[in-house]
Amino acid sequence: MTKSKFDAIVIGAGMSGNAAAYSMARRGLKVLQLERGEHSGSKNVQGAILYANMLEAIIPNFRDDAPLERHLVEQRFWLMDDSSHTGVHYRSDDFNELKPNRYTIIRAQFDKWFSSKVREAGGTVLCETTATKLARDRSGSVIGVYTDREGGVILADVVVLAEGVNGLLGTRAGLRDMPKPESVALAVKEMHFMPEEVIAERFGLTGGEGCVIEAGGTISRGMAGLGFLYTNKESISVGIGCLVSGLAESMENPYRLLDAFKQHPSIRPLLAGSEIKEYAAHLIPEGGFKAIPQLFGNGWVVVGDAAQLNNAVHREGSNLAMTSGLMAGEAIFQIKSRGGLMTKHNLSLYKGMLDKSFVMKDLMKHKDLPSLLHTDSHNFFMTYPTLISQAAQNFVRVDGAPKINREKATAASFINARSRWGLISDAVRSAVSWR
Amino acid sequence: MKATTIERIEDKLYQNRYLVDTGRPHITVRPHLSPSPNLLALTQICPAKCYEVNEIGQVAIVSDGCLECGTCRVLCEASGDIKWNYPRGGFGVLFKFG
Ligand SMILES: Cc1cc2nc3c(=O)[nH]c(=O)nc-3n(C[C@H](O)[C@H](O)[C@H](O)COP(=O)(O)OP(=O)(O)OC[C@H]3O[C@@H](n4cnc5c(N)ncnc54)[C@H](O)[C@@H]3O)c2cc1C
Ligand code: SF4
Image (tube, rainbow over all chains, first blue to last red; front, side, top):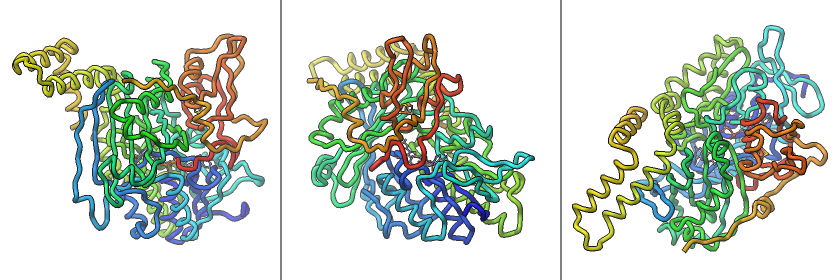
């Protein structure tokens, strides 16, 4: 096998790598995919919400056999202080549609399924194989990879780096920088199992319906961070993520943060009686648009998390990964079919496709938000959640005090904490970065 | 009423599946006289508690329970404090769910 040359080698069998490998294999290209895990998915961690449209663009009938947990009918956003949450809940029966829009999934199972599709399409998938180094010719063009298996270099016209947020190959070859502590979040996550009926009852769900909770506030102790709780069929994924720079500064311990989140009076009853079967951790790229590296060069392209194509604001990553993988595969196929070489010039086609898609447009839209949350995290994650909780309690509690006094007290508490100027400046900066 | 149960990290890691590559740790710490602030931070923020301060005041790693998250790499590889690699193909943590 090492003697033959491939049209493309894909490093990694996560969301982006599987999309790239599948889209090329199904068009008849000779594709080799390398995955370091025991099977595709055994190294991967996600919340996880799957966005159907992006997968549908790759495998239209995925609903027939993909391992899907629940389709989402309800999303809750909670702002938390230590004893309360203020929430916005959106639930709609419209989501009980013929082809649901979002599902929860379990990544180890989902990736295994996606990988089986790559094989069915004719791709060669080699698991338990870590690519250790990119091979380059004298001019610096990438011509293949070395692995930790016996045998020398494996050659290909193009290498698709779908190696995820920790991608060693691309950073070691100097194709892009290592992620910075302020542009990646560390998420820790547990799988809590309980009977299907209990989940249905606690969240008000019937049949295959699902509900997710995203939570921000004092749970991240002043760091930029978010907690989440996603319902699967017979389990609940619960986790919390904070910027690595924030953790390093505060020396907060991630599993204690997770334990505290689980013990929060609003979360604890939802998990009561569950059996924990796994504890995982993973980084999430959060640098947004400004952290995106060079995406293509002579003989290579980079896709998914390795390229920081992750929308932290909307908690979307897998769909950007799948879409970038698909586009890289399509671009390579187009270049190949017109007899072109995999030069930097020709591969810019991939970037052109991405620029026109939602991937770059969405990331561009929020380009200033990551730095705002980073520099102002204490206000956004401690001060405001506490103030808003007090305001809500002031509004709800009935104790004989005149309403006007309560409203004045609420306004005063905001001004005391942030000053008038601080409030205005926070509001303006948030609005501008959101625009 | 606040609950006070403290879960031990060892109990958490015990739930996981691992295939340890005995004798071939994938992460090593450079010997040092006193640890850098980032190296010291790892003793708190590594989600698998792989890093600890030893008797002679150095930060040492036992990578058996490593979740391969890459946090220590992002913080300490560039300075040379640690050397970070993936375990050999097939070894390391094996997520059942992920
Ligand atoms: C806790 C958490 C919650 C999340 N929630 C959501 C969510 O709800 N919805 C959403 O859309 N996104 C979510 N994301 C983001 C999403 O998981 C990622 O954006 C997505 O997985 C990126 O796909 P990828 O293919 O680029 O990388 P990955 O899925 O990480 O895949 C990389 C693959 O490459 C392999 N690999 C790496 N290096 C090598 C090598 N040298 N040799 C061989 N193989 C190698 C790895 O083993 C892995 O299989 C979440 C992420 C986390 C951590
Ligand atoms: S990779 Fe993550 S789990 Fe492993 S030692 Fe580093 S910080 Fe700890």
